[in-house]
Length: 436
Image 1: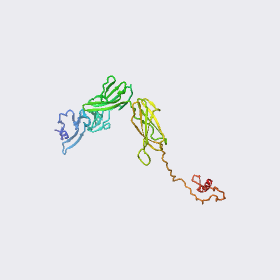
Image 2: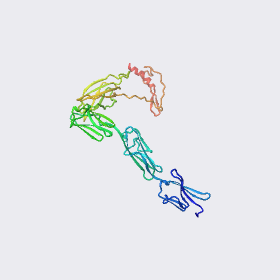
Image 3: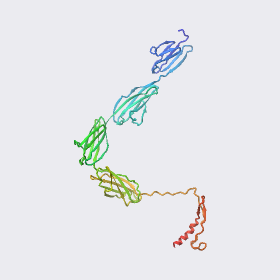
Image 4: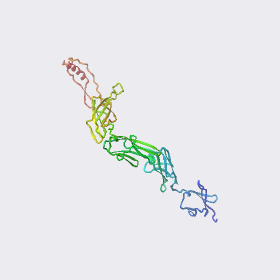
């Protein structure tokens, strides 16, 4: 070498690579980077950078003493998912499932979890971390979960993982009681969720239903219905939808009835009258309401006990009724009640079939609000006066019986006169004489 010094360029040892000597003077010593590395007049150019190009590069002049400069090259690149949980996982209800996602990139990417078309089971829109564990799963956690890696370089990377949950049937009913009447057309509905898909059958009073033409079954997705055409009294009873799959069985009852619904009291519990109270209520019934039964009693029999009073009970013919569809509205006024007193009441209604269940209610007669005592203002002016000696009747000056003495006015700060207290003393004998 003709140069008085030697220029050496090398890449220092890293966690993944050994130290590499790249150039000695102007000679390339590595072939695999020969097309991407160039040394020109003491300056090295690097092209088509890769993640592995990151590291410390040393430029050294072999003189005495050596001169050395270290350059750090940080190659940043977009994230890439390197590992994640299976794209589809099926778990059994009440078990746990762990979703994992790993990615590389420079800077180190942040991984966030989200759920397709909804919030995460925790209620959050997204969570951060390399993994996410779902404890005690049920059908509500089913769906597609997405892990997204982002470091601000290029486009984020993502991966999707779907979870399905196996569970025995779960049933809810649109109505637990259906009120109807003869000749009507009704539909009983069960909403059934299960995995694997269940088999659904209907029964009435514990017996399988087998009445072609009169009863129809309809299945649409999770909705299973039983339609009864032309209801008769024989159709009233307890129906049940029964769903079964490999993991278990579930059932739900639906009552088809002509009985009236238990009343709903609509009157204000705080009465506006001292000795009476008007109770108003409404109920549902396919048939007209014929009677109602009313019971009431004092919440406390008297002031010396916490025990309730005795029930007063009577049955009345239903006359004044407002009817709108299946809804019937009624009222009744209770007379002879005690003022400012709490009461308990119970009401039932009856149609052609039977009595409804009881509706219990608490109310009170009008209560007088407590009085409040007004404290005089601290800034109110006060007046003092000297009381004169009492003058018996007939002994007043001038000898005139019942004469009223002269009143001396005292001025307040606003100029309004105040009468002397002596006025009261002098008037008192006069009033006594007038009474005699």
